[in-house]
Image 1 (cartoon, rainbow, N blue to C red):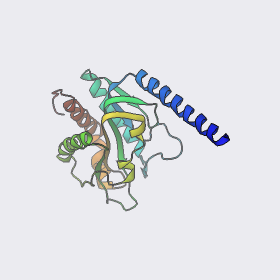
Image 2: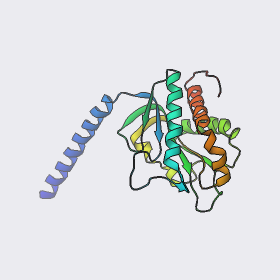
Image 3: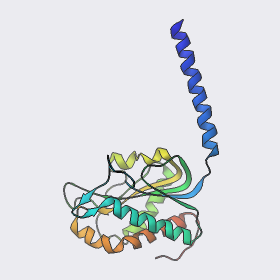
Image 4: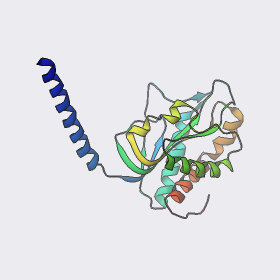
Length: 203
């Protein structure tokens, strides 16, 4: 009898939780674009790659801020978020990262995503950035962190890309990347705007 009562209580709590979550989810106002700077706001745990005096998180923030700034210029509704955030709904989400490798210059640019719509979006980004970034690419979703990015749960977007924009543990890449961070942000904003049906001038 006690087991049956316990099971009934658990089921009741699950039903209450599901209903409460559904009500909360309906109350969330969707945004058009979410731009996340990887590792931003963290003081412990996964705080991003480092190489000498280069910190990935600082570069992530520079690029993410530039993307958001450019999208706002085009009157596109955009929300800039740090690494950890509350639940958000969006049409498009992009998380900004740079890769790090224990074997220097063995990595490069790459893309993570979880659904078919994002895969098609990824192809278009790779075509644009691939014509600009002069170094190598990894396969899409080549790590668990890309394929199962934690942000997919918190940011519920129709299309979500996790962008690794280059390897900061490779000096020849960082030498090329450093003066071009804002230009890369402009290219990301351009790609997002095109995906939304806008026709901005290419940077």
